[in-house]
Structures are given as structure tokens and as C-alpha cells.
Image (cartoon, rainbow, N blue to C red; front, side, top):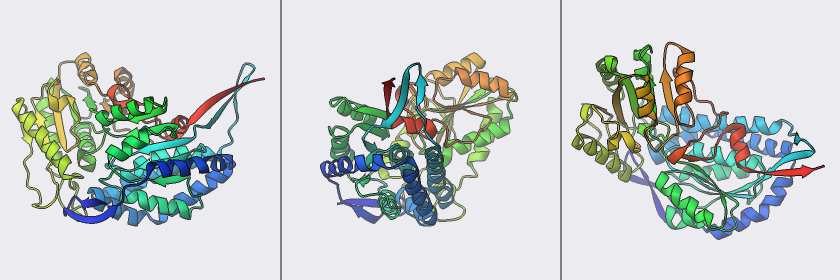
Length: 446
């Protein structure tokens, strides 16, 4: 059995039993032809029933996710549960539209289910990252074998109950619990899997891709990030810094798209630091269930220790801690927000994904220098640009080597393609692009 630990109390709140990958894959293979044969409208109706069930269970799910990974309840309600509801709704809307084959010359192009999908998801947004894979995979006519993170697995079991209640047949969505090794490795390397969709660290993503390659299995990888928040000289500095700090600290910094590097012009550096410190000071650290809490614990003791190690690394490498070291509860895996200044763009804290509430403020000389620094990492998942001119911001955003960019705080769009370049992975999730990731293309010549 695997214990599930509440990171705020360090108490066991549940257990899960390691699953049988071979049995789950066999069940998925048996169920796939019948599920794929259902008309699109019928699959949409089942997913619509699932959405209704998720909506009804939202308060319960928010409390469950808060308990298993530490998100403050308002974040758990709005993001951890609210976002997967929006994601599922967008996939249902897509599925309810008639699908016509594309005509290319004398050919008709069809998109068909890829088959059985192996989905491996992390602990930081356990329900959202599950729905982002499962919803489009099922919509396209695939079946799924899902291995959630052993750190936060309980919401996957609840989702499985809701899937069953929605009338989705047995074998269409299968959950197997376990650690990355051996359970995740068995799933990624199973010859009965037609596509592996993985979200997690770049190190683990390499292993998944290598295991899948032995069977020539398709892989989609959503990996790490080290995103830059580029604040141009003419930007509304107060707004850019406030939103930037909030983005970096969301979910206690455990977000792959977090803008962990704030790039500011030399002439406005000191002002930006003052604004960032003032913003971070408003983030109360504490019990996720307390109404005043804005930062809960990190999801595990291992993650807390990793983040604290990076803080010490930053100091050892010569960065200045402008904010940090605040008091945290004596029990729980807490880390108070940290803001570093004087950060060398090539330093470890500016190059490696920390996955905690740590922000690096970096000076730049001019716009070309800002773009160079923003692009000078192995990652390319997200980013931001702020300017008084939307056209200017758009021009700079086009120069950033990354999968998505927010201009002047543009809102997250659950229907837009999500994914990265470089060591942030390949493939896309969400909306039409996410749906198509789980399909195979067939050309029929007439």
C-alpha cells in the first residue's frame, strides 16, 4: 500500500494499492472498439453527464485536492477544480460539432482514434492534468489507462467513480496506482499502448520517451519550464510586477508555466524590486483551509527540501535575497516566498526549474538583451510581455521561443493549444489541438 500524506499536517489521509498495468491495458483494449463505434453525439452525451457529475462534486473535490497536495481552498475551488470543468466543457463543445473529412485534391482526410492511451500525470494540478488528457482522448474514441502521481492520487479514484456514474462503459477509463518505477515505466513501455501522454519533469520525460521508443509508441510530453516575464520600459510597472508575483507564487510556485524570471529594465530595477517585495509580503503562508491563507505547503517533504536547497544555492552563487525567510508553521512542508535580486542569468536559480515560491529578478540593458535572456534556457513553455503598446508587446512575444505568451496579463484560455518547445516537451493539450493529439490521420484517395 502507498500512504497519501496531507502536506499541511504530515498525517496519512488515505492509501492506494499499486495497480496491475497488464490487466488495465487488456481491459482498455477490449473496451476500445465499442467505445470508438459510438456516434460522436453519444460520446458527447456521456462526457456531458461526466461534466454534470464533476460540477456537483466540485466542493468535495476541492477539499480532497487541498488535502492531498496542499492548495489553499480558494485556489482548489477556482483552479484545481474550476479549470478542469472548463477544459471538459470545451472538449464537449468540440465533440458536439459535426466532423467532416478534409478534402485535399482527390483525397479525403479522416482523423481516427489512436487506440489505447497511457496517461501519466503529476501531483501539482492532479485533476486538471488528468482531465486535459482523458477528456480529449475519450472524445476521440480512445480508451485510457491512467497512472496518477502517488503523491496526490485520491482525486483520480473519485474521477473514476464519476466516470462510471456518467454511464461510460467499464474499461474506457482505467486507473493504476503506483510509483514511477515500476508502474509508470511498465505503462510507458507496454506494447499494448498506442500513445503515451506524460506530464512531469524533463528527466522523467526522457525515460518515458525511451521506454515508448522500444515499441515505436507515439509520445506527447508536457515537461518543465523556466518562463520569463518580460517587462518593457513603457509598461505599467505596478500591474506587471503585481501580476508577475502572483503568477510565480500561484499554487506555492508548483506550476510548470510559472513566470519565475522577472526581466526588468535597468532604469526601473529598484522600483520593480520594491513593488515585488510589497506584493509578496501580502501572501500569507499557512493552513490551506484558513480563509486568510494564500500560500499552502509544498506537496511533499521531498519537494520542500528541493526548494530550500535551491534557495541556498542561490545565496551561494551570489544572489541577494530581497525577500524571504519568513515564518512558517512548525508542522507541514512549508516554504515562505523568496525574491532574489542580483541574479546572474546563467545561475542555477535562473536556469533550472525550482518548482517552489522563488522569484528571480533580472536586469536587462535593452530589448534585444531582454529577448536574449528570455530565450537563454533549455526550456520553452510559457512567458509574458508587458508594454503600453499591444502591437509592440506582440512583436516581442513573437520573438520568444516558447509555446505560449501572455500579453499584459492575458487570461488563460482552456481552448488554446498548450505545450512547449525544447526541454519543455512536444505535443499539445487542450482544445482542438489537444483533441487532434489523440487521433491518427488517414488519407483515402477517391
